[in-house]
Length: 360
Ligand SMILES: NC(=O)c1ccc[n+]([C@@H]2O[C@H](COP(=O)([O-])OP(=O)(O)OC[C@H]3O[C@@H](n4cnc5c(N)ncnc54)[C@H](O)[C@@H]3O)[C@@H](O)[C@H]2O)c1
Image 1 (cartoon, rainbow, N blue to C red):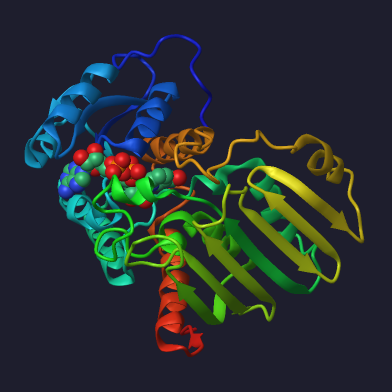
Image 2: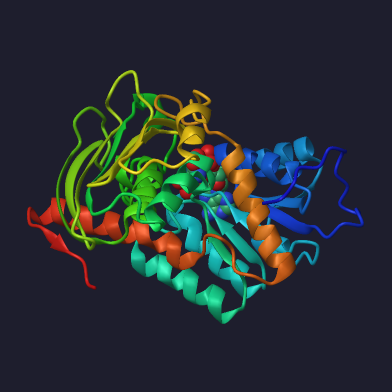
């Protein structure tokens, strides 16, 4: 991962640095700008969005070029990579021209709201030889990497249960203030597609692909067309089972929780806090897990802006390094589509009232 700069960054630095442009100027775009500014191997060049006043303000705040036309923005030779921070159902509409213009892409989650649209982005990036990194910043956290390593080392023995729980709270204003949130057309779903997708991604990243799901979904406390509560059972391809509970109705809102159990060990964590780390065959490094990860306390249980910004910094730094060195990014388009595939199956099961089996 990329070291932080101590001194003020200059785009004309001698060190190799990727010029980034941001598409969108809303809530998450400011996380992108701060992350880029904190990195040694990236610098912010410009911003583009569809609200001119907001673009002007954003550009002035970060002292970068403001663009009001996507074509002019994509024609800027100082921009080697773009970050996409527009409503989810518009990701493809900006990612595809960006890829065709030769720009590498960091795209916010979900990569797109359907598998077909996500695949079109992946294909266009491959055809145009540009790198694509869909955002799942939680994968970069140290506790997640430790659990993944324990799984790869076979420390859990035979996996039996892998479950995720997200009992969050979003008030009425969260949905009414924004024209895209809570809509099928632009959010692509509700609590599962928008908020819980990070948790779904971690479930798949750590425990592997799903085999079959069965789900119930409902809109219980908000006036929105998508679900605000959903519960699913999953059978994974490795033979283990799990439950997925997600909600944006659970006041006052709690940290997301994941738990993995095998016949030789169990690990549970809430956001960055490891709450259980127990293996029948302990190792010296287990002490790090038990004592070092007590959590920052930052979680989006009730406030969408409560995001630990380090994850974005690590992921953007990884993409910049991949661009500069010619390697693949840690998270590529194919990894980014896995959560969309599981979510689509869960929605299909909830819609039909039948189990949904994934193609192997
Ligand atoms: N990684 C995370 O933890 C995380 C957190 C929040 C949001 N997100 C994702 O980030 C994306 C944006 O979410 P947000 O909360 O910042 O939304 P937002 O509504 O705050 O901002 C959206 C921005 O996109 C601009 N925009 C809308 N349509 C556009 C278009 N067609 N072309 C150019 N600009 C356009 C708007 O002017 C606005 O500046 C979503 O996909 C969301 O899922 C990710």
